Length: 154
Image 1: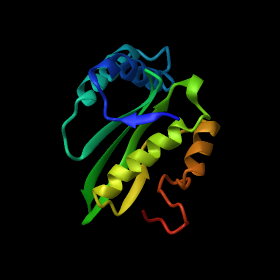
Image 2 (image 1 turned 60 degrees about the horizontal axis):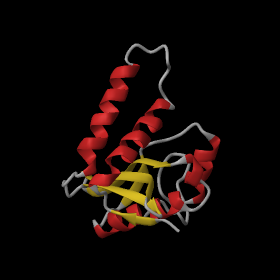
Image 3 (image 1 turned 180 degrees about the vertical axis):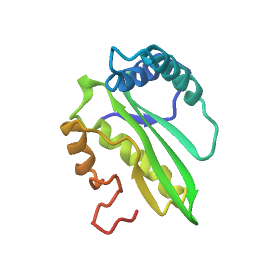
Image 4 (image 1 turned 30 degrees about the horizontal axis):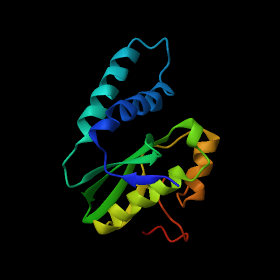
């Protein structure tokens, strides 16, 4: 069982590696902007590790003394409603299908519910069948709205 916690300085290397791996999947190696996108991902990891914005949250999963994944989410006001947005989730391949992703998502949902969100959206849709299966299993509909009971609410 993973421990889900706030990030610490020791997580920077792992979060950077995972953020780059998460992006690398969608980069075409012939794309000239690829190197720039990877550089920006490294900066993203450093910027978000100790983010103190009250509407943004990065949580990490730890097994033993190793960081094995992260989830990043935000809340925003849209049309008079508070919307929670799961922007990214990544679990080290070795730790997938062990419940780590579910623990990360549940911790993010708790944070969002504490922020009184009206709805939760997945902002990182995937064409990967396994990833889509995971998202469906935790309650996201194909259009990216969290709907555990089909009612489209939190």
